[in-house]
Length: 182
Image 1 (tube, one colour):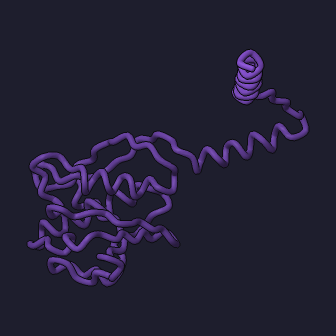
Image 2 (tube, helix red, strand yellow):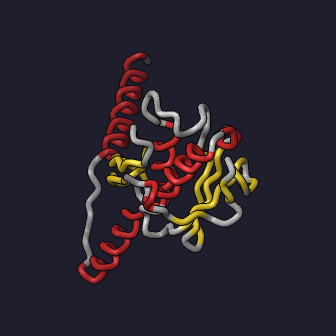
């Protein structure tokens, strides 16, 4: 009885191993010349939505009180890059950078009709002082308008529009303003 049980166990293990290894073998791929162009187009389209590394320009306040361009490398899908670059600007700022209030977070970025709407955490509204507020706002605006699909920027906090901040009228979306850039 023990020999019979051992044989069945060995046979089951062998069969299981073969099944497992058969599933791990490389797949055979056949390319049909008629659909090669369609496949290439589908791969290219998927690549636009898939993760990709790219260099992006963001603007930080320099020692002279003007915005200075800085290039960063980011990896993510094309539609997520505005959010990623803003998180880099706002949440991963260098030590000693006081452009953004402590603890501020970027919740969401949406783009529609060339207008980006950025939703921040409530700390965004704690910025005081006209000049500091302008530099903070235009660090965001000038960073996002580096993207060709964004021409203006609207600000919200926890989903509610910000109409005034530090004396700056935000009732209309802001356009890029080069006078703040060094």
